[in-house]
Image (cartoon, rainbow, N blue to C red; front, side, top):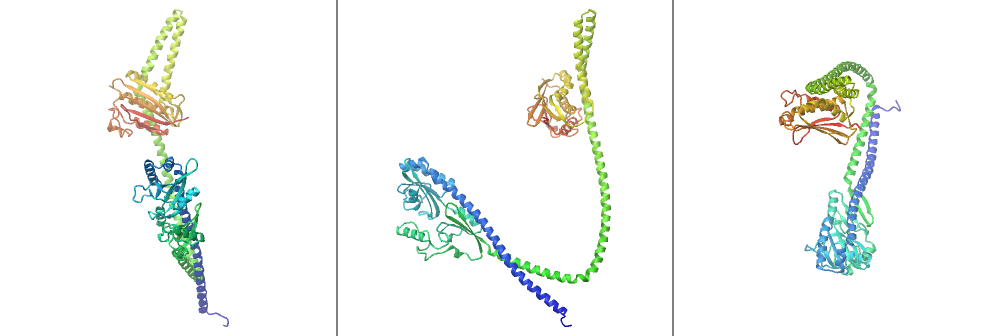
Length: 601
């Protein structure tokens, strides 16, 4: 039909349109990539240039104050006013040491006539001592203006450097001479060179004075100024013995510009001024290869994008034919996915039920463990009470016997109508009865089961309770007690009866360890360090054997013939439940233990 485009023509038009789009995208993408890469390179160069400039400023500031400080040196003023060999030798050594410390190339002093009296390189064949530098700008400008800065080649060393000079005046303000410090930048140039980015510094006249490319030194990056030509002509006319610091004639006929050595487009240039110097630092960051890579990548990405879009368009043209098949496949996939989800849900539910059962079983076992631990602690209490029963009975029998005696005395005194004596006997009975009550109350409190919640417990009160139960055994065995009481009101985070149990266990161990020891002693002390309180228990017995020491807090480890090896393990667990620790304490003799707890207030 007229006006109808055949399918083959449609595909040819489709291909031509996408080819044109591809060409436009590739060209536009390359241009955008070139601009972006160039901007990124310039930004990178600016950052690197700022960093190099900061390093140079730091180096200049570090040396700029050197001549000013040295100008105040009284030894220098004395030498300049009255030159002598001893003063010169003293300043030679001082300058030598100072130049080494501050990494200056040279430090030297010139008299009012420009003659060098002392220098840091006095030992070297290239020593400045005796040389006259009256013709050097850093000398006559400093004599005229008070200070000067000059960058040039050294007349002796032939090495470029920055000369910093300052005039030295006497008390009346009359000039005595000039102190000069030369700074070389070899190390700085080497550091810059390692970065791989050509860098150079120009002075106010555009002359390159510091550079990572030695061939650029003393070239210029612009045409000679009239003033610089005049100064160069004056220098040559004066017949100066120094080499001309610029490799060209004064009329600029042999001018070699640094910019001519830099191919256009291969570097991103960043320029930064150095304050207070008139210098400018220029850094050349290689950018040509990076820009080329960015353009190539952008063009490839553009071409790939166009190809992908063309392929996507072709795929979309065929989607209609495959829509029904994909819908069927999607439905089948959905059914299969739901079946898999149901199976996985059932598995997860079973796993969750099993995990819940295991958690309940673990909680039950934890409850049983806590119950058994409480029972073990209670058994240890009762065993301890059994060990001290004889001593406690003796503590009670004495007051009971005394009560009986006072009761008999009161009866006799009443028959004699001695009411005052009877009252005294009854008062004694009351005091003894109170003591028996205290002992029995302590026994009942110690023997009952307690909860492990930590509260504020008075340190001395807990120790007093433990001592009350072992006082009889201490007296029976003739053991001396040395006790250092805690500061008044000191309390720790613990539980009263369980803390007493730990102290009592340690005292019991100490009493048993002192069997057969001459002059047995048990010492008790309390020490406060910040928020921690330490209770020390020590005896002067044979101590803990080396074979047992490493396993002391392991269950069933003991060096006592009839011991079970559980007392210290239980005591350690009790203290750990309070958030503290029980440890063997090294000492000169015997055995010592320390209980460390958190302070309550």
